[in-house]
Image (tube, rainbow, N blue to C red):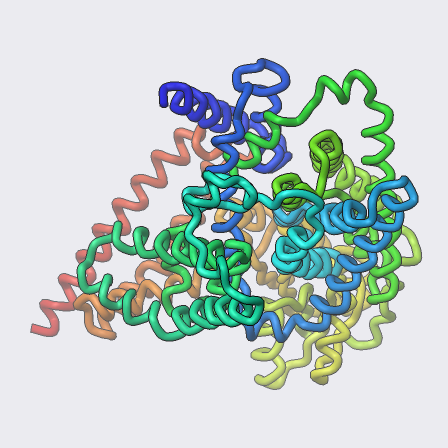
Length: 623
């Protein structure tokens, strides 16, 4: 017991230090956990036997697949079916087939080669999604296509876990109810297992197995909701967590008892519950356990990687890793071409998914338990997966370098010839600019719409709204759109820096022009104010103000009082912006700007006093 507690303390302590450092360096939490395991295992030798903890941590994989199922609303899956089945399905199939063929060519057994194909067909969901989000690339064509492929890969893990036992070449290992791994041929372990299919004829096994799956579906559909309502009446927060864990552990136990993968049952239950009103409650209850157990899983994997063997002869592992990345990149490049990706989107799609992923560790461990892989081969595969994931940041750096050189390439559409002018120029026709454009045009005024996203321009043209493609920050495009004669310029660009640049240029060129600008946040508001914008609208300010008014109406104020408070807050915020702009310095972080903080506190106190005085006056007048 003392040894287990010491080992757990070492693992958790290392994770608490290593993972935040990894996240700050932009490598992501998964790589942080792996590096933590490498540090306490091969490097420092603080842990020697982590198998027991690994068996416990493997239950995090079961929880992860349950959460994946919860996120897969069947209606959303149906809407994405073309990309999921087409792009994602072909990626998994072609990559798996190519790697299987390559393994057979390298004299690996057919069953082992099939397992290798499944392991390396997957990419790193954790690293890629996090990096795409950090670089604001999720909304690009390449980012959306990469997400679709990653979603398909996550779903594909389920049949892979079901197929691997069929490839077993020796005694099959199973996950017991306590999370430990036991051999089916082990008499002692076998006696401890509770099986619902042992001794049954083939048709009986099939009937019981199908019955268990149907029971999971029916329970998720009709039983979970009443139980949740019953628990809700107790008003005890810990009971929600207990019930969420009961669902996952109970289904995993049932699947084990009928000889199926626990992950398969929990994933299926997650999909069934994806449309439930308790979906988010379940997700929030399970998420901490999933994250902790998965972190322990990756740490134990890292602690078991044989880096001593790698440094003794690094050439074979490096060669296999680079060959894997090259093979996946070629297949991804071809698929991207077939599915209409070009230029930057195609490069992003190709490089972002060319590595192996964290599910590769899961499948390697599972295949090792099933005796599909030899221990020596499994160690080499873990090294290949780990190295390919460590190389992923370099692939994104390569993307940045390549796309910079492509900035003047044929990928960029030539700017449209602007043949219209009007009193209102709208730069940026995203969600913000669309509303402005519809309102102004509906009131009978002509607008000239400019945007640098060709897809957005083409979409607007389908709805009968004419727009011109080009970079709105280019002076020649603005002058062609009638900047010299325009009365109002609306700056609705997504990029804060580009928006500030456009406002500054327009103010220099037309001192008398009225400029309405979209601000990302308060700091961007100050930048636009200094650049010369007349009216500045923060993205979330007006909608948040309306929400606040609705709150006031439902906590005791009348509609009139709430509207007055909303208007007073709005006017005071305008005044606050002008006041704080005098103290704001872009060279000084806000938390270190004492004058700014002191004035902000004074203004907040003034707001509170003025609102209370206003409401008191209104009540007296009503009385």
